[in-house]
Length: 512
Ligand code: FAD
Image (tube, rainbow, N blue to C red; front, side, top):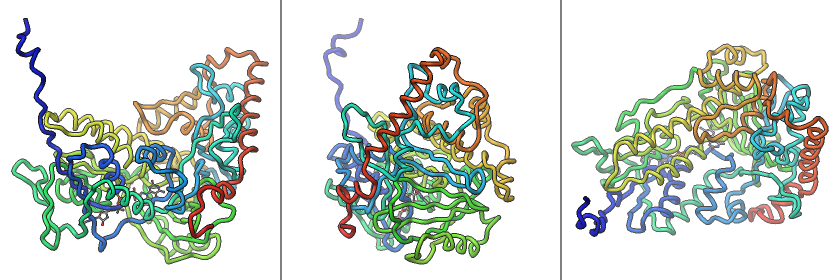
């Protein structure tokens, strides 16, 4: 029998081990981590952020996906104030142009496609109705896509009987977002230290004990968060965690970025336009357009890339193009000992689907879920690393799909079609080609509507459809498809233009 002593005595609360958190790096990753931790960890935890003005930040990262709304909400950031402070705009999706040859295009719009009936996702009804013969018709059933292409935006059409089905994210100025988060974090007690780290010291067990700045300032911590960008000062240089190089699969290794004149009207979507050796982005902000050219340096020189980028601008360049070099891939483990890497220090997949900031956000959410206390065990760190890996691999496959299923003629693109795919992606494509089913692992980021849009948009069309979509009679199917089509059209037609909505609710001071 259990001793009454054991039953009666309450567990003695032990002091949490994580009392001093040191965030190294003050880019988007560092300040997102600082703001979120200041909001959620016990007030007794001392949070310090170290950043070097001399090193600066990567300074790009302007397009997001809808999860960012949750992040801002949990910090208590008001949407309109946030957009005013960051010169931001709304984003309903990404328009991929030229990936199946010049003149081709499709949208990866956020939110659901049509409506599901029971267990079967909408695209199976659309396939049964003959959708594969007219792939572009898929997007006529999607309110976000209709609104995006019409240049319209509001959170809803203002009619309670017409639920919008819209999902949105933002475009924003990354440095202004980091500044906003900094104000928020410092207001919540985060201590900022400016200076360049000269030394990272480990204890006898190999854990990081402290970092030392060039001026001699020393910062000791229980938990270190490596947000040092591509330098990966703690996880890479100090702890030597291996980097899994994905450049065989995602070979673009450079980007040139340049700000350009503001677009008018302001599209509520990002553009990702294929070119002979990669793709270029166009991101509409209230005060300027973010432009960038991503390319494979084996197929395009830096000078040719600069000509290509500047030649494709809409209006004047507002600065000189800035060159960024990178290798796609990730640190094998994001959490090693008492160090967790977030942002570019954890890895980089190119910005094709705007996933990097989301990976910072989910890394933070997972860290909070596995927050180390006095009874922390290695299995928890292992679980964090396993979940992180699954998330990154799902995103990697999704990006490879864009490159693989292309229909362009240049050597870069024919090479992309020929490169062997990871087994996981081969299986996903085969499953979709058969009867339109989408295979996802665990709580992967991209849901069925995203995979379906990119597969169909890039010409992968299923032979059949889910058998349960046959449960409707032919008339019922017609009614259902026309209902979803009319709903999307009605929602889009009732929204104001994106410019009008921004001007009325979220205009940045200089734009008023
Ligand atoms: P950084 O911004 O590089 O910050 C590193 C920090 O570490 C700096 O504060 C620096 O001062 C500090 N630091 C480094 N070494 C030291 C030292 N020794 N001592 C003290 N401090 C130090 N993401 C998206 O979600 N959407 C996009 O559209 C997008 N576009 C991108 C386009 C390109 C070309 C690239 C390369 C990336 C893009 N990203 C995008 C990714 C995005 O930019 C990053 O995920 C995000 O900016 C986070 O960067 P970071 O904070 O990890 O690194």
